[in-house]
Length: 348
Image (cartoon, rainbow, N blue to C red):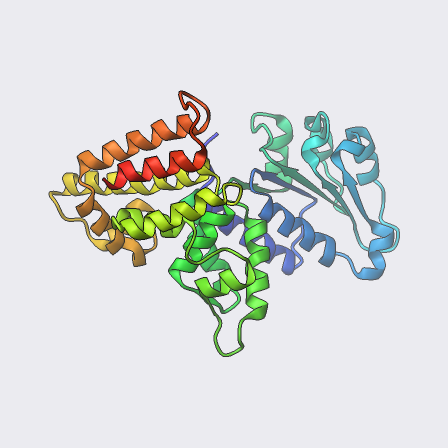
């Protein structure tokens, strides 16, 4: 299955949410995919807004996939509402519902007075099934996928923009690298930060992150990447010493992965320059590398410090030490020793 584009996911989510706010309801909602954030957002909105508070006790039911069967679900969904104009049936963890494709007969002729919401997380329903095709015809489908790492900064910026808040590029990069592609976790942390900002300065900085979330503004993979790509030996050594003394907080596998992504972008910039005859505009560089335009100059400098041949050597080193960190041909070296050795070889 082709990966769903980030912008398409957001556009579809916003369209469905706008329809719900305008009370344009569909009888069936299939919310599916690996990224749970948007599934939860739509499911929670339906649970909190479609029925009035007094109606929910009678005409809203929340089920869980592992605790129900398709026949039970169909029987429940075909009942008439008691006091509201419609009933709402929400199935959490619908991926645990066995033989969900048997809902085909229900979806083919869904009752208008029931809103059936299927929160199907972690994967997508087989699009070849008649159940899926009938849902496309008679219901609404939201399909999501995990974001690429280079999409996280854009998502963070967009999320805060909706709250009339900004974030400096370094802070967004630190958050994205430290928290990973867990949008629910990122949103929770951003909401915490938003509440502690002064009213006259709604801009999140690395200092805010360190003080309120506990991610060091000085000791993190973003600063390590920055030091290594600038060949700042003193700073790089200080950071890896800190990492080596705190291996649980800074696992070597994660550190190597971040370095691999960094040097892969540098290598891509070399190929772009070679293909274009030596010059690539800042806008094209940002778009091709999937980075904030603010960091284009950093990558230009890194490409000058690490020519293509050296960049390829570094990538080979990173692959080697990734294997060694996982126990292959490692001997007695600790993860801290491996990290020190790796960074020494990169810098020298």
